[in-house]
Length: 128
Image (cartoon, rainbow, N blue to C red; front, side, top):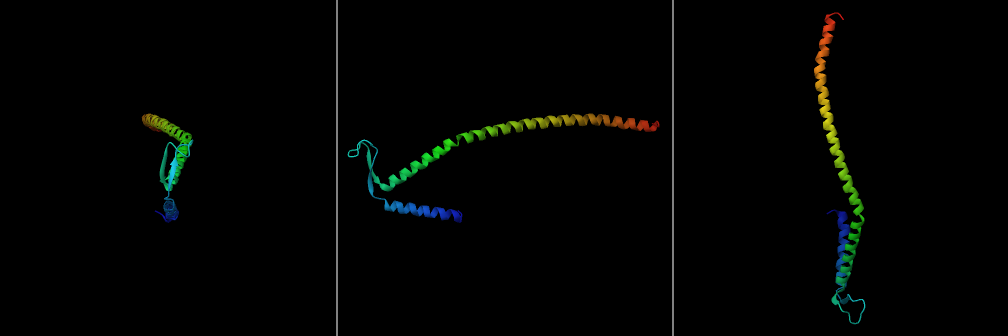
């Protein structure tokens, strides 16, 4: 870990430890919004559990919201990768076709080059 990470991580851990030690008092956590005097579903838990639970719920909700919000970007990236592969495949096929054409041209040039050389030699021998 770098020094910068320690300067950020250490204070966060210290704040978390201090919060935990300061909030160990048991509280009643109710999930019944209609009856505060006699809730149907209630738990007695340390206050830090309620605080950390709310923090984790917010963290998960924010992460899920960011993930859903980035869905369009991820879809666009997948489409761009597919398009790139398709273009590379077409380019590879075009390169192999041009290599075949170049080989054919070289083969044809190889056949006609000696004939041209012979014609030039014959012309020079015949004085022309």
